Amino acid sequence: MSAPGAVLPETAAVHWRPRLDAERLRRRGRLWTATTVAHSIPFLVTAVVLLALEPLSFPVAIMAIVHAWMIPELYAARGANVLRPRRRSADGPERVAAGLLGDLVGHAAREVHGRTGVVPERGRLGIWVVGEAGALLVRPGGRRVDCWCVKADAADLPSGDRIAHLLLALREDEQGFATVANLAFSGARWRVRRRLTPAVRPALDAAAGLAR
Amino acid sequence: MARLIRMDQTGHTTLAEWTAGDPSSAEAAIAAFREELDAGYYAVVSAGEGQAEQVRELPLEADLVILRRPIAGG
Image (cartoon, rainbow over all chains, first blue to last red; front, side, top):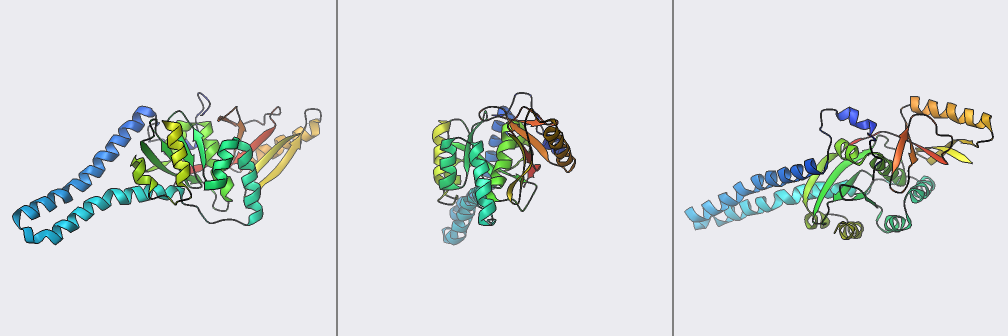
């Protein structure tokens, strides 16, 4: 959770974006879902019309259905990609960075990081799962997930430091953090979960448990 | 002993250490702090569980001040 009244300085770089609060987040989620449906429905309608007009056109109808199914899957894959592990630094810096990150979080989060490479963090908007180049936000209730693409402006940092950068910014100003980050996906948790690397899935499951 | 650290490619680097009873170490820490802010770093201190605060002056009473790079949407 961020300190009351604090504003993340990076928000100045995206001054045209309205500050993201819970209501705006809900609206963006609904818009995201509506957009995905709008992209998928035409393919389903095409399949139905083709089959109605000419049953022998079923191969094309099947292709249209596959397209309708793939669109949300591709969006979800893009969302899950924000938690994909990045290239490792040398062992020494990785160890030092992991030590600092461990000092910033509690025992439970440290244990999750050791197993999954990401860190859970409770916020006002939901439960965050913070990775090296992005974060997932599990909304209250645990069913919906927003995937945010955001990273430290330094390519040579060890993994732990990349996470620590995001974690500190999140703690400074949660709404500002979500304002600066780019939304890569918003939708069902199950859809994102199966696109995550298996090692990270327990962290999402744990976050969903905390969000319920 | 309080520390000013910068997250960097080595994990982190300790730039300064100071104690309340040693004004010269505090002055050196303040100078190092300003230099890093001028270089584009942000300074953060923990403000209780799950909270952090950005600072623009070195808080001499803090145990640990962390310097981080800006973040940006990817």
